[in-house]
Length: 246
Ligand code: NDP
Image 1 (cartoon, rainbow, N blue to C red):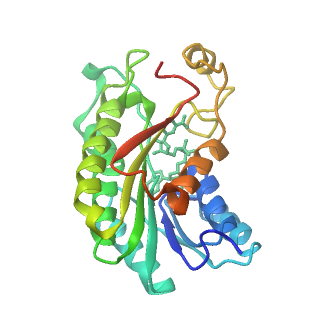
Image 2 (cartoon, rainbow, N blue to C red; image 1 turned 135 degrees about the vertical axis):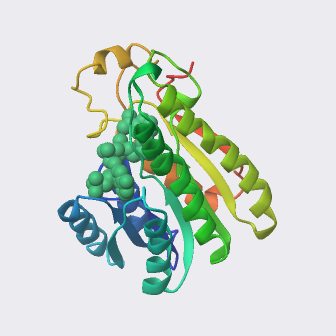
């Protein structure tokens, strides 16, 4: 038996990287999991199979988080498939790097749509259905706390917005025992930020522990927040960044 037995989780962007690790970890802990993806149908399918191998139900739903209707649709899909929703993990996100003079309005709108509007809309669609004692967990970034290098005005803006959302909703949903938290990763070895990519050495200079983290490091904190262990943690941000913000 797992600590999340009987719970249903929705993880956005669960096909690769941090989201895939979170989806699998929640499944290992007993949750049935709906995960969304944009392009990577095969990889989403592999995550589903991995969760099913643990004896849990799992479903992958294609939903572009830049599309407001698709975001709400993924929440409806989770409710329709498994009949309840206990844990929402807003993980899907896009990276962005570039100095402010070079950022087009289309880029601005896209990053805000995926990184800010989608977590808002998914939470808005989920809240009426979330069980009491439920969880909203959003993946922000330590880039909102510390601008270690130039070129992250748009990404930093998008991730900083999640702090306000998290605090306000923690206050709003507290009476229902629903906790709302932000997890802020430092450099994590994924397709978005490979540990052997250009610029990776430069990032590591800012990390007290001197290395990229792994997706499992973020999944462990999400699992802690999602379970009974996280019940008194709400309306806050937790850095899992190897000391990047020090
Ligand atoms: P990856 O690029 O490795 O994976 C991104 C995931 O999000 C994929 O599953 C992808 O789906 C999905 N996704 C991207 N855009 C959309 C969209 N428009 N609609 C639906 N799904 C989408 O990223 P990471 O795993 O590294 O990042 C996950 C989260 O962690 C993001 O919010 C990111 O900002 C944050 N983060 C990451 C850090 C890092 O160093 N890696 C550091 C700090 C924060 P598909 O496979 O179909 O493309």
